[in-house]
Amino acid sequence: MQQHDLTHLETSIKGLCDSLAGVADRKSFEEFLTTIHKPGFTTPAEVALLRGVVDSMHEQAKTLVGLKQILLSGASKVEINPQPLPPKAGRAGGGTGD
Image (cartoon, rainbow, N blue to C red):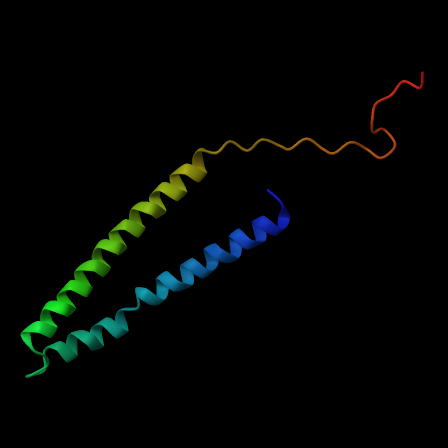
């Protein structure tokens, strides 16, 4: 893997972790739970919409957990093979001088 590819992948993984941590922030969900218990919060139609969004988010979170397991499991099975070194300068072509 080229260094710039490795750097890009590492940056993407760190960004993913940050995004998932933001989604998992309990404080905002705790505030939401307080709000939904207030009298007259919403109509039955809005409840159905909210329930659909929450159910969808829950299913997507379970999918992400599965994908994470696949990623980590697959990565742990990859055998690390050292890459051959490039030819040294002056020895390219391997000619015998005939």
